[in-house]
Amino acid sequence: MTDAQTLSTRRKLKTPRAAAIAGILFALLYGASLALIRISIPADPTVESAWLQTNSRTVALALNLMPYAGIAFLWFIGVIRDRLGDLEDRLFATVFLGSGLLFLALTFASAAQAGGLLSSYMIAPSTLVESGVFTYSRAVMYETINVYAIRMAGVFMISLGTIWLRTGLMRRGWAILTYALALVLLLSISYSLWVTLILPIWVLVVSVYFLILNLREPGMDALDEN
Image (cartoon, helix red, strand yellow):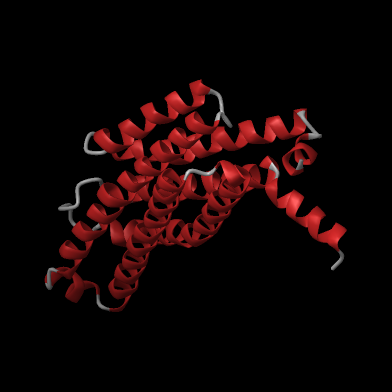
């Protein structure tokens, strides 16, 4: 590959369009997965296992969307970091990257446990419920995704909002809105599990904003390299 081709490829990766596409894919996939789970599984972790019989296919579909949402989120993180370039602050960049990866790891762990629970129920439903494994696994999944993973998502949003304020790469209003939404995630999850949809909605809005900027300013890519 020639130097010109290498430069062209890198320029394409650095554009806001790449982050926008990855962010939109994550928002749609993760949001759809959360919505399917919320309408299929009772919010109370102590509820009986009747939903496993009626909604198992819907939950399985939601779990199958999670890995693809995670891949898109990784691209979203990577392109944003690449766009920061030399402006990246080591402290906040570490928190930004670490919280994003922890959010993904905890989400994947919870999804894998849910998948294992569904598979076990298909094999031996009565044994699973009567042994108490179902109750325990359900409670662990609830804590993992709704307490730890979502709070890591809040830290992710706060760190990125701080980076935007320090670098000036986004309007101050976006950063302040990001702080407010992150605080809702951190403090209000116990009131309603639908609060978790704040993350995909926020990523979708930011991604669409990136995409609009890219379409309005076709010369932005060239400016990034100068």
